[in-house]
Image (cartoon, rainbow, N blue to C red; front, side, top):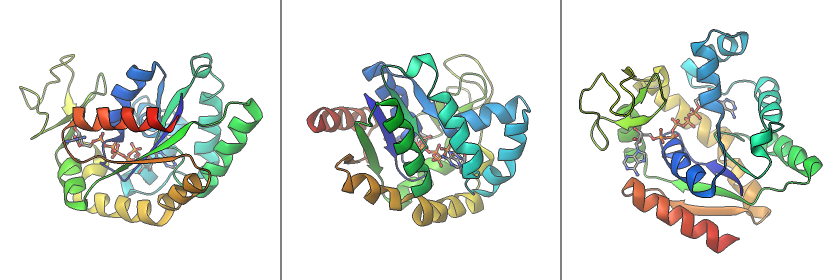
Amino acid sequence: MRLILVGPPGAGKGTQAQFLAEHFAIPHISTGDIFRANLKSGTPLGVEAKGYMDRGELVPDSVTNAMVADRLTQADTKNGFLLDGFPRNVVQSEVLAEIVEKAGTPIDAALELTVDENEIIRRLSGRRVCRNCGRIWHIDSDPTQDAAVCDGCGGEIYQREDDKEEVIARRLEVYREQTEPIINFYRTRSLLVSISAMGAVEEVTSRAISALLAHR
Ligand code: AP5
């Protein structure tokens, strides 16, 4: 299965990706996570990405496309992959289409997660992440026992810089202006599978799996 996850910030892409990647036994490739890992280890890529991410803007295509193209040459993607956060504009969609065409490995589906705007704000403002294992938590709907410590690995819990209110607003604008047009890109290629991502995490996962299997 070669799958793309599309949806606004906070739709639950990262949360669902953890379960879908496990279910279909494919690697979860999140461009946001790759940028954050580079930021943490202070690489030139991380330093370059930081300003864009903190402002809620997209990192330039020249940087992002090369990074994804390289990741898709790695051996673990041979039998499929789940892309989370890429593509994020029409140019990135076209670049991905070229990569998979050259490799003879077409995309099976672009799964769109739709969520009400109030719920997006609630999810993003309450999101917390483990600095060590990357597990995503929520202060109300999926809290850790101790607000500062990950229940999974004991790592430190933190709030993402781009989950502050003013940056959330900019990320939503960027999503509407630059990312939403890719929905049509995949619809016209009969690859779009759209589901509601409202409701409990496990309900959304089973809705996604059923819709993807029906699309095959
Ligand atoms: P990225 O990390 O990709 O962020 P995003 O797309 O804005 O998405 P999020 O991670 O914010 O949300 P999500 O949908 O994964 O939600 P989650 O599962 O965490 O990108 C960050 C930045 O990196 C970008 O702004 C850009 O600068 C740069 N970047 C990345 N890719 C790029 C690209 N291709 N090109 C250029 N720049 C790029 O869930 C959110 C919260 O809700 C969590 O707390 C979770 O516990 C909770 N939750 C989830 N599902 C449910 C549910 N069903 N019920 C209740 N709570 C739920």
